[in-house]
Image (cartoon, rainbow, N blue to C red; front, side):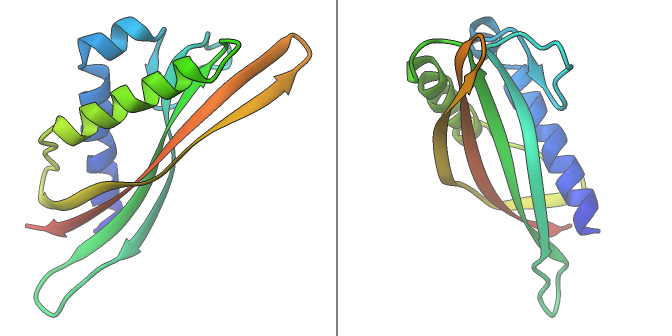
Length: 136
């Protein structure tokens, strides 16, 4: 059942991000899996880790998931501004996970990394969250 909670959490996170008008107008796409030809700036859902968090009376899970920002700007500023915007959206959202209660969700780490390419550099921002769910 823990995998099911992760899937439903992913759907809720995606809906919150894709449903935010300010974020959608600031990027060229919000993706679960970005297409090969995605144009920056964009946001995508990335890696997920799931671990059981059962008690004697309830089935639960800890879900660690990542949201990534990709920016082709010459500085980190756009990536960091988008990261702050995403964090604000997720903290303000009352995420609903069908069949599960979201007991806690918090940002555990964020970083912004510069990548060099032949046609210039680009930035990858990563927000890593931990969520604790319990099956209803």
